[in-house]
Image (cartoon, rainbow, N blue to C red; front, side):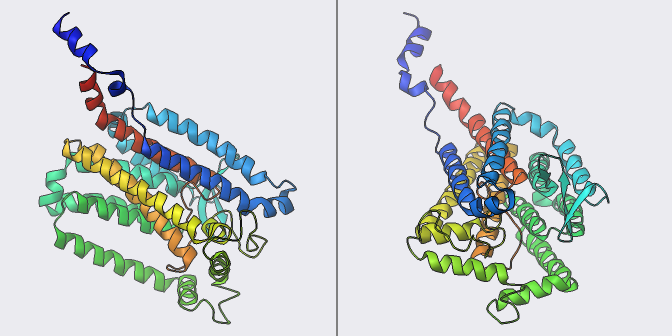
Amino acid sequence: MSATQSKTSYSPLGEIQPKFNRLFLVICLLFAFGMLMMTSASIEIASSQYGDPFYFLKRQGFFSFLGFTVLIITLHTPLSLWKRTSWLLLIGSFVLLFLVLVPGIGKVVNGSARWLDLGIFNLQPSELAKIFIVIYLASYLDRHLKEVREDWSGFLKPLLIVGLAAILLQLEPDHGALVILTLTAFCMIFLAGAKLYRFLIMLLLFLGAVAYLAMTKPYVVVRFSSYLNPWAAENVFSGSYQLTQALIAFGRGEWMGVGLGNSIQKLYFLPEAHNDFVLAIVGEELGLIGVSLIVMLFCALVFMAFSIGKDAEKKGAVFEAFVAYGIGLLFAGQAMVNIGVNTGLLPTKGLTLPFLSYGGASLIVSFFMAALLLRVQYEIERPRIEEKLI
């Protein structure tokens, strides 16, 4: 027997088979949990408005099919392609963010122009812009890592791009996406090794700008004041109505919940119960245990994203590392803001909970980000598998 044959036959079949993927399991659990709770939260309103208690389930099922299609395509797309076309993704992001501001193209709801009507669902460009800009930033950091660490120019260039996107988001307005995107960019640049004093200066300027914009918008001031005292008579049925109803839902759920499907708050008391405030229904029906399970799943997802990024960085795969870091930060930021809003820790803001809230754009983009993360994991671990096959 030759040496090559000996090496090949020496590797047992168990070593060359793909191992159990915990990341994919966490993604599937979040999706399954989301489908269950979104259906429970929407069944009454769907029945009254559309005459079909499973109207939203059917639509979310269709979005899920599109999401899994995107996931499969993304899993089979090399990361090098995203890296080469990152500048096209950046341009596409700005085009989409600009289109929603064009009268007759952008769809205005409650005074905000955040959507493009595609017929089968409303596309929210900010959802795509966040991940596309993260991909571009990862490509930039890969090409200019030394400049980012040593020079002001390398530090400021990506922030100028993010600043332009922030201006477009402010014009919609979409303050939630603005904050998530800006903080994600800051964190990615910080992880790249930018000097701390530069980071702190820009962070203070950003916080000052956010405070100024908030003070110039009367409805933001009203929302913030109602957040500080939600149970005041002038707030409980106006600016803080959603928050107080969500807190009532959490209070009713206590430790174990009132039982799946037995929520009272979803019966027209809590607006957007199947969308931005689905976590409150989880708290009411499944109690603290159900909410804790969701929080743990998101913690596991973010931890795995950073572990993949750290592994990639150790191997010198800078682009792959920052794609993983960026996706982890996006998931973490969006989950933290939504959970904070539902529990009263943050002012009320319309921001979906990935994989759980109803909505085509949010679900499809969540699958896309998850697929990118799985692709990074695959490309980083592939050399190990190939070594075992030799």
